[in-house]
Image (tube, rainbow, N blue to C red; front, side, top):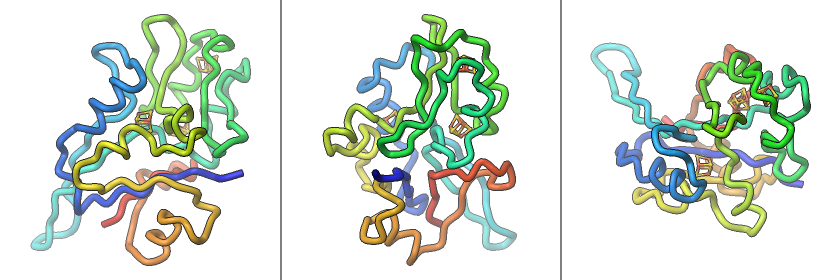
Length: 179
Ligand code: SF4
Ligand code: SF4
Ligand code: SF4
């Protein structure tokens, strides 16, 4: 079984938000909510400062506190892709997972359950890229199996410099940003 991850080249991201719009359309995300978003951050030390533009979402962490704290098993690691998913029928809306996620990746859906990025599980099971990856006009997003040394994501992580967001939180995030 694959262990999916995402590698995003921040040097190519122009912050156009096509990924955000594609996600909302593909996943029927209600108005006013989002599963992915754009963050900007000034990185580096003067005088070599750079503005990093990042497309962010759930990191599908290898050590997800949102799963271990869920009292009903609604938040779980899916066998296929080792992605972190929420079974909405099991979710009682207690918000423990929201409190535990350092990335603010989850929101309360108006229907009462918790929603977040699924890594487009419904698409990847069909062999397709996630919607956000497929529409990116600069092709800065890559998706694939981190456990396959021949995958593009593995190759990029072997050959390029990258960082993750808040690694100190100890969740072992699986969205990587090339710098
Ligand atoms: Fe859970 Fe947050 Fe990690 Fe996603 S980013 S797996 S919601 S802790
Ligand atoms: Fe689990 Fe739902 Fe509670 Fe989150 S809000 S911890 S998914 S039952
Ligand atoms: Fe949205 Fe799918 Fe991209 Fe996640 S992988 S941000 S659900 S389009």
